[in-house]
Every structure is written in structure tokens, then in C-alpha cells.
Length: 268
Image 1 (cartoon, one colour):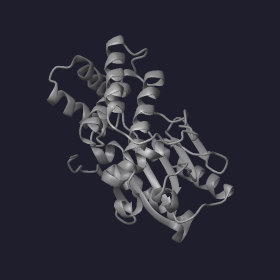
Image 2 (tube, rainbow, N blue to C red; image 1 turned 90 degrees about the vertical axis):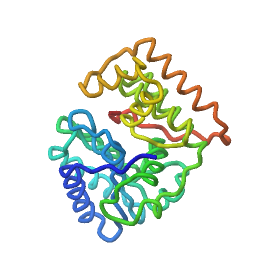
Image 3 (cartoon, rainbow, N blue to C red; image 1 turned 180 degrees about the vertical axis):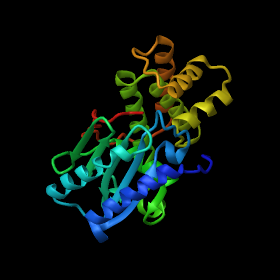
């Protein structure tokens, strides 16, 4: 069980400001604004964590509105505590049944750069599988109903597939710290079905397996902001074994994988 987390005051204030911007744009169609990621799960650090937000609206918007929302949210990034903002807007229908993981707009923004991806011409985003599951279990509602009333339960088979995809992505693209700590999350989920944060999962693993050098090194790199690539062989072996244990658990038939995970996202 992930223990309750105290949300940093500056993080809450920033997301409350996002809620105001969203309400100005969506009005009564704004259903809820949910803080997830390390700020909700634990392990948030100003020097290495972004602000993860999932927004629910009542109905799809026009392409023009998607662009307008994305630009308005990206413009707030200079006031964002942490390394930047990672935010997606989805409809209530998508939150209730992910299907193709369609979205209204995705924003990845920091003080240095911003990426706005309107959803009108995209098939979907597989990252929403894990984001929605984490929100249902652990999100902090800045505004809106309790998460369990908005986000449907995600079948275990889809979660396993999504976590395995994250492990593969990490091996190919991420620094050692992200990839190894994410492998700890996979191992925690494989054992007891808990969706923990990366830092918490690493601490859990070290409590179970004290002195594991790969995990200790990854935690230290995360806190120092080090980006180690290529990933050393011992870390690759650890991640590969975590993936094997994850998919070895019984699961239903995998879901169709036509939607794509956005490579523009900064995994941190």
C-alpha cells in the first residue's frame, strides 16, 4: 500500500492555477483536474521531477480549442515547480473506457521548451493506461469528483503490457536511473499489484534485497540528476529480469497496440 503523501505547497498552488486556466477555457465542461506521478505517489524532487496532471472534460473539443488549451497551458511552464509540466486532457468517456487511449491535447513543457500535441489527428497515447490506473488509485483531485468515480479500473493485462512497454522504452531511450527505478516499479506490481512511484518502489526493493548495487546506484543518480547512457550491462540484466517476472504472471489476451506512445515525452 502506498502511504499518503503531503503535496508540496508550491506544487498544489501551481496545479490550482492550471485549474483556473482550464476552467476559463472549458467552463462547465471541465470535470476534474488530477495530480498524479511522484507528487502524489512520493519521491518528488524539484531538481528531477516533473508535475504530472490528467484533466477530464465532459466532451471532445474542436481542433481549434485543443490548440488554444495546449498553448495556454504551455505558457504556464515558467512558473512550474520541478523540471516541467506533463499534462494530458481526456474526455469522461475515455476515462471510463480507455479503448484506443484517445486524448484531447497533450502538453510537455518546461522553462526551456514546450511540445503541444493536439489529439484531433492522433490515434491515441498508450501512456494513458498507466496514468489512468495511477489516478484511480492515488491521484490528488485538485478539482472534481473522487478519482474512483471518474477513472474505470484498468484490466491487469493492459497494465502488464503498458509496464512492459515502459521497460522496453527505458532500455532504448532513458538514462539508467529512470530505467532501473522503473524496473523496481514493475517488480512491485508483479509481486502484489501495487502501482508505486519510482523512488518508493526502489526503497521497497532495497528493503527486500539490501545492498543491491544497481538499484542503489540508480537512486543516487536520480538524486544527483545524472543521465547515464548507455545503460551498463548489470543494469540491463536487472531490467530484463524484471520484465521477465512481470510478463510471467498470468494475464489475459494482450490488447491491440495500434496507439503509439509519444517519443516527445520527457520521462523523468
